[in-house]
Image (cartoon, rainbow, N blue to C red; front, side, top):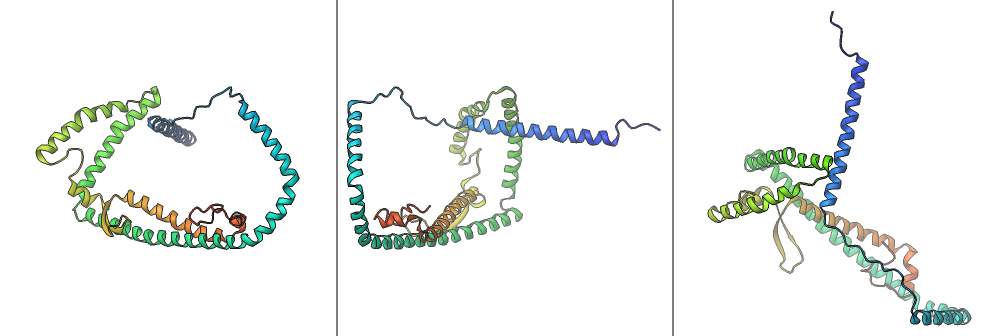
Length: 282
């Protein structure tokens, strides 16, 4: 009988070692992909900090005046505090009521608007998902989706992944080669073909994009033209839904925290009474 080359224990050990190696290599690639993405983003400008900033005569004069004012406040401060306390009783209560009412009203309107538009957008997203589901299975858009899937897999495996591996090993970002070919070959060729035939080679016709890749929804966007039909991607509708959800939650939170006394002293003093700023709440 032929003896096995590896025992069960050895096979399990080799399998575990392989899984650990694959995991570590995947983590390494993910970190390099994140590093490459951050490298391609435009740099953020940093403020310039100047050194050796010696005080001027005006600064010294201001310091002396500040010291004199502090001494005067120490003497007259208690008397002024008593007068201010008496005055605040007569002015603080109306200010507090105004601040509470304005913030409750603002929070209510914000929650109402966010909930209304959020439900509309959510309905549009559900209707769009069902529409694209039907168009995939009835053949209306199936060929376009399959071609995009195949092209996306081809680009990811044979172009994006090799570029990532080259960057992970050598530190060289060769994305500029792809961008250069796109700019000097693909885009000019697409422009010529579109001028001759009316069709693009880098994207589907506008009618296909609107029918298979856009979600139609009718709503009022607040531009004064009333309700109108919009054609947006699922991602764009999703971003709008996130915005309205945040608006609804913010409005409800404003109404709740209005009843918490944390901001009452500010309103009592007559500051930030307008409910639109939410000062002291969120």
